[in-house]
Image (cartoon, rainbow, N blue to C red; front, side, top):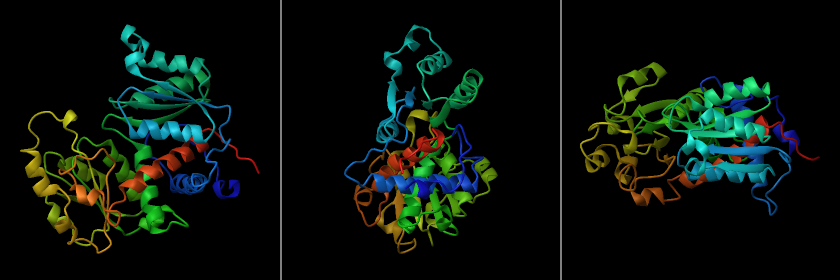
Length: 330
């Protein structure tokens, strides 16, 4: 297994964004995740790769899938895990976020996984840890505001690649594949990270949404914008629908959820206009009957949503392993 993983040398101490990821880093992350996917099928699904390392989950924002996926990934690598909940912390007593990070560093933490509702918090903690630890503590962004969610984009990439070639997944399998990202792109850190990863893979990427949730400024990413879903569907290989983040919306950006579903919701009728083997993805949680009809979400012949969840553990194991300088026994 070690021979499968070591195809280059991982140099990145922090994973904060995919905007500067190299082709080699994408390839290493996907190939390493494929190796750990195989580990997760065994009876003994733990490896001692990060034994003795301390991984701290600092989630300043609520999360179910991402937090539990990271915790499970850390435990599968045999790391010691520490979890942080802001509601039961000294933040209520006036402690700052950087003070919290310094506390975990003083406890001997090797890797910190950061999630925060404000953009830039993981980057600020990374700068502070570089100053204090001389580059010995790695920071992994688990989602910050509307900025980035690199592990979600990498697990989406992995799910797509393994669907196309389970035995040998690699990013360039997506070259030329038409992919739509549909929905609330304005508020989506997932969309922003997926734009970087899917463009790097050479996909024919298109963004689709109502004008209030897909402003013209997104044209600076160098991908086509569509404000009518039906016009974008022909020839589509994969459709990634996004949750409407109503908690982040200010003002009346949508007439109603019913009208949104009529214009941008995925249905079987709309899929008839796509490639015959089209597949649907969604980062979750899903607003059933809004972004997707329930029958599509649960149709294994059309949906890759379950594969996305499964891919999350393998991808996060891969990043923790690479960032933590993990070693596997012969």
